[in-house]
Structures are given as structure tokens and as C-alpha cells.
Length: 573
Image 1: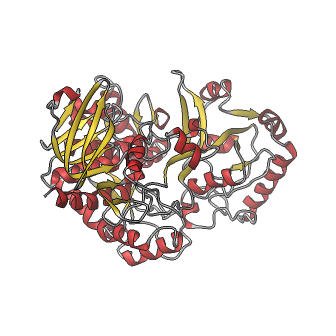
Image 2: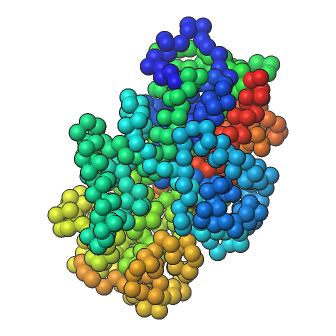
Image 3: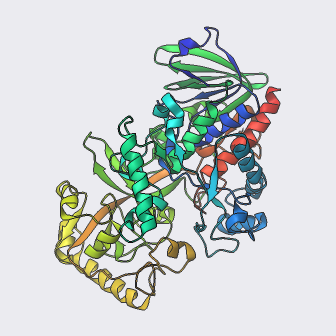
């Protein structure tokens, strides 16, 4: 793989490639890798100085039903079951043909990339579909996670992997996944956990002698590093960082060239098979954001900075149109905000660690609950917007905070640990519920009533208001070791009480360009634009704005990367 430090390393008259990929996030890197594996010449263009996009900041979960991994944990699952689940969840929001294409091609895409590269996955024993009460859903087998990766294998390329969100690391840059977290929390209770914790902490201490952060990579960083490591082994790959695309050149056969820009340098490159849009979606484009996500402040977005939507205007100039009919234009998660020492703002997504646990509840400014706290983060964020509960307030008692943490405040936090969070206003504490309400500026009587209700529900195990903890998905993100009748319900009774403010953060685009079963971008008449493809968040989500399961952006991104590559390679030939 050649990494261009300057466009001057290209011939002055440009170069020719079989495919050009715009965006080096997870989907774009997968496209480039599939092209390289097939022996074609590929240019991967990335406008930032890192590879990985938002995939590098994610859990790296990859939802692909029917793979050879599924048989290890759920041998009875079938593609027909998965199709039924998607039909029940999505209905007519997206064409069933596109969803079936994803399902039919998924197992081969996973097997192909694992057989021919260092990208490797494993199934997690229990990782339910998010709407687990629908027919066709399952508790395991469809969600895959990347195997941890030794970043030292990348050598100098390690610095190109987008570092994880600092607040998701411990001990100054040590990455941890859910397995590590469980062992770290139990290190004084289990010898196996003690050994695991000792091993990863020792590795991290060794890393910090020669690296700015830990090199034991997990989750999305592991997937991105595995993609980069695999790409590095191919001489037919060119990676251009800090490079944007200024113009598409269209000829008789479709998209035939691109003009690249890097500072004051310009180069025109020719392309035989086509251009694949994988730039991460529209979310940071000011005009598109205002039109599609009204009222959502850009500061609430926890996604990586590269998805500016600049390539979208170029595609629209060729006649590309966005898909229609989605439940939402974006996927959502509740986030809490805190200023970092460097002046930037951390938008921390509350995925599974706190809000669904016993001893937690979420209220609006009236002090009233408005959502099932244990629902998926997407539905939680949508409920915040639809009920205008912005900000919302995630409230817990002392016992819950110590056991589960609260946002950026980690489990087991001492008074000293909490002091800076209280000092800068990220965390609010009240000796009583009335004092907490006063400090938050919300209705005290409403908060009192909400806590009294949740305490009664904790005794019975039943939440008649929002049915918290009734599905397998909700129970899975609760606490099965808690003593109550419902793993998602527990009383708030140990003062002092704590809260953080929540905002609806868009974690990725659901609306993208309309495509056909080959991932070709369509125009307003439904005809494919020759030589133009879209994958990842640039492609209109086959889920139609419904968050059906973990990894439903990365999984389809990888599978349609394989599909687009096959079709574009045929054009190039």
C-alpha cells in the first residue's frame, strides 16, 4: 500500500484506477480491501488525517445474519427468520428486495473477507436484536464483533488509526470492551477476573513506554486496524489522506474522472470501474443538517468529524437523489456533554452502561418520565425529540452511581473522583430530591412523584407506565445480578442523589442516496447513474431509519461494499 503524503507523488497528468473510494471509514476501507483482494487497482481518498471514521469510535459490532459464526451460538437461526424480522420491523419503509440482497450476500461477504485478509470476527454469546419482541428476532448469532488486534503489527501505520473517544478509555488510553469491563469490575471477586485485569493492565503499562496510547485494540478500533493491516499487504492500494474531491468528470460511460485537492495541489485521476461514495453521510453539512435534523445542535453529535457531506453535493450534481420513507433521517442516542481540558466538547453516548440499570430514571423539565429508559438508544433519542424533552435528566441514587457509574463518571467513583465533575457542572448532586430538582431547574413535585412511582414499580417488578424491562433486549442491558424482581428496575432511596443532562445526539445518517441491488446510485427517475456507487451511511439505510439490531450500519456497509466491488470490477474489465 502506498500512502500519499502529497498529491505531488502522483504523476502530473494523474493516474488511472479501477475504483476510487471516497471516505476511509469502515465501509470505504472494506470496499478498498475487496478491490485489492480481487487484484484491482484502488485509490482510497480520505479528507482527514486518520482512517476509520465513526467506525473507529464505535463498538465495531457487525450485524450479518446467517454467517458460519452463527452456528456456534445459534444453530437454529435462518435467513428466512432474519427476513421476517426485518419485514416486521421495517415494513415498506425500504424495498424488501434490497434487504433480501443484503441477507443473501452477507454470509459470503464475511467468509470472503475472513478467508482472504486479517479481518476476523467472533459471535457474542448473547447479543439480542433490539426489537426482540417481534417475530423473527433472535438473541444471538447475527451480531459479530471484531477480534482484538495488536496495533504494534502496524508499525508506523498505527498512527493513522483514529484514536478512540478518550472518555471510553481508562488509565490514559487503554481500550476496554465489555468483557474487559466485567473483569475489571470483578477483579477483587474472581481469580479469573484478577488474572485478566492484570494481563491487560500490564500490557498497557508496557505500551506506554513507547506509544502515546495502548496498542491492544478492541471494538471499532480493532476492526479498523485489521482493515488497515490487511490493506497494507497489497501493492495495488493507494491511500490519500487529508485529501478532498472537488469535482467529478462524467463521460460517455458515466463517471470517468475525479479532481483531487490537497491544500493548493490539484490532481485529476481517471477511473475505469467507478467511484464509490463512502464519506460517512450528511451529518456535518450545515445546510443538509438544518434541513434533515432540525433542532439538533451539531455539538450533540458524537460521531467522527469527517462526514461533512461535501461529496453529496457532487453526487447531486450528477442527478443523485436521497431515499425516502425512513422513520428518521438519522440514528440517535442520548448524550451528555462536558468540556475537555483542550477546549473541545465531549459528547458521551449513553448506550448501555447506566440508563437501563436499576436505580436509574429519566425525567423531563416537569420532573416526569417520558420514555422507557431501557429501550434502544435510538428510540430513546427519538422520544426526547418527539416529546421535546431536551434536555432530559438522568437521575440516580448513590448506590446506583457507585455500582454502574453515570455517563463519564465511572463505577466505584470516590468523592475525589467525582469532585471535578461536580465542579464543572457535568454532574449535579442533591442531598435530597428537592435540592437536586432545584439545582437542575426542574419541577420538584414532579421528580418526587416520579421517584415514588419507580420505587413502587421496583417492588412489584412491573412498570405499568412504560413497560420497562419486559423484552429480552431490555433485560440484557439491565442487571441480572441485582436483587429485584426486574433487572431494569430498582429503587432510588440512598441519598445523596445525582443527575446528568441528556441531549439527543445523531450517531449516524439513516437517510442516504437511493441505490439499487448493486449499490448503484439512482437518479430521480429510478435509473442508475453509471459509475457511481454508495455504501455505508452515504447509502440510504436498508433499515429505513429503524434501529433493528446492534451493528446495522457496519454490517450492511461491509456487505454492500462487496456487492459494489463486484459490479464495479466488471465495469472496469
